[in-house]
Length: 325
Image 1: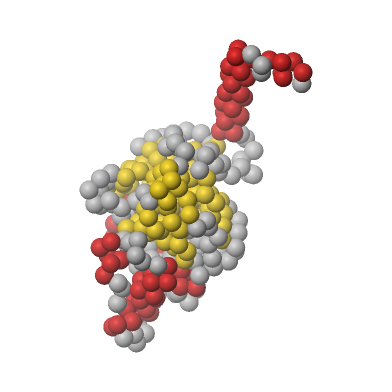
Image 2: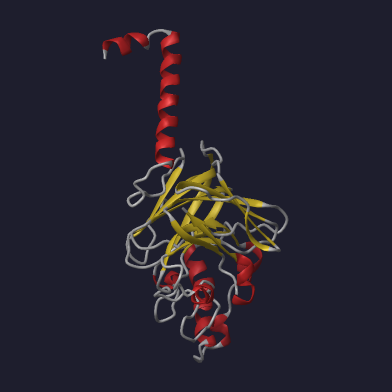
């Protein structure tokens, strides 16, 4: 250790150490990307402003405040159920309880009405501000139990709702029974930089477009560009047995509004068998400007699908398969 300590006392030595550390970092990243031990690999978080969100039941354990700017979310699903989280920016004068009572409860009642239950009109009245002053700002794709979803988004100051609206077997949203939280993005500026992607996706009026060929297994960072007004998200799904998989079942299930009151109602658990859900990103809505989010995933050899939560009549424009060898 003495030679190293002596070397740090000179300006040359400091530059040399920085150079060696840079070489070491690059070699580690290269080793990670080309790792053949994919059975235990998981998406890694490379961000100075990493926010951890965890579910241990029908809940979110998340920080109360985070700085504005580029933020990487590491969402750990420590439950036995399928989940995701979406970030909804709400007016500054609205609270978590108001969101629950004025949005979540009436929306859930509306679903009951569609299933044939007798619900009074006022019990289904979603607050007007939700449609005019709230908007989605990213989040994670669907993630299997025991797995971690990694996604990045550039957030402005304000109040945000963290929500999962996957449905219980009885049809109730997860958000109704606890998967609803509030987080404030402060005026403090994050030190994180925008991620660098090796795979590009775009969502526009033509649907979901994969703009890069994925040639190798390992860790990948996906960028997702949303055209103005886009309301479609991206979920990354591994098709476990491509020859026998019921893709139409998946396409019908992926949207909350499909088959209400019927078998395979949209987003009602259990999810269709034969598919593993390994992350993605929720949409970032802006009526006038392009928006971009990112997500990471480790791809093992096999067949995958990128699919959006959209109604069945437009699902084919939002469904892409690819194979990793």
